[in-house]
Image (tube, rainbow, N blue to C red; front, side, top):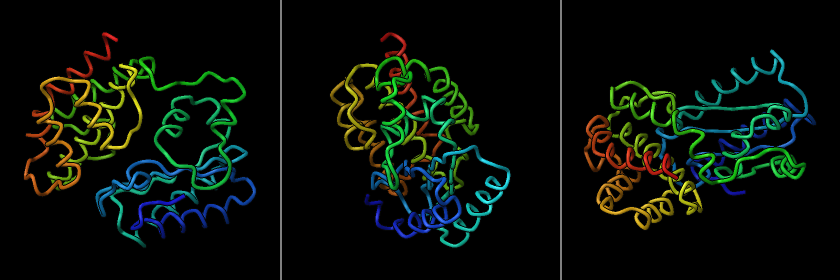
Length: 250
C-alpha cells in the first residue's frame, strides 16, 4: 500500500521496528490521517499509526512504544506529532468507534484485515450514517466552543504555534471532518478525502461555497491566505453550527 512519498521511509522504519519487537504477536498495521490520503504537509501533519497484537499490551510494551515514538520524532523531524498506537485485538473488538474510524479513514498497511474479520462475526458496529454522526455531536459542539474561546479543543493534541497552520488544523477538523459527519447524517457520505468532502458539501448546502473554497485553500496553502486561526474559526462558525443543527435534526 502506497503512503505519501515524503513519509514512506518513516512508515517503513516504524513498521520494521514494530515487526521486530512484537514479532508474531503483531496481526495488522493501519495508517490513518492525511499521510494516507496524500494530503499531509511536512512538519505540520501527524503520523497516526495503528497496530493490533494478539495479547494485551504490557508495561514493557508501553515503555518501548514511548521510546520509539521519541526516537522516530527526533530522527526524522518531519511530523508535528508521532503517534504509534499499538492495541490488543480485544481492544479493537470492544471499541466500535475505533473500528469505524480505521475502516473508513485509514489504509491497511501490513497484515490482515482484522476489522473485517471482527465485523464478520456479527459484532455491533457503526456505519457511516446519522447514528454515528449524532453519537459524537456533543463532543463536536464542545470542540467548537473551546476553539471559539481560544482553548485547545479535545479534537487536537495542540494548537500549532504558527497561526496559519492552526487555521489549517481548524479547517481540516471543523470543515472536513465535521463535514464528513454531516454528509453521513444526510446519507451522502463517500470518503474523508478533502476534495470529495468539499465537493459534496457544496452539493448539499446553500450559500456556503465561498467559505468552503477558502477552507480548501487554507488546507492546501495555509500561509498564502494570511488568515489567523482566531479569525478563521469565527468565519467558519456559522457553517459549522449549521451542520451541527442539521445533524441534530436528521
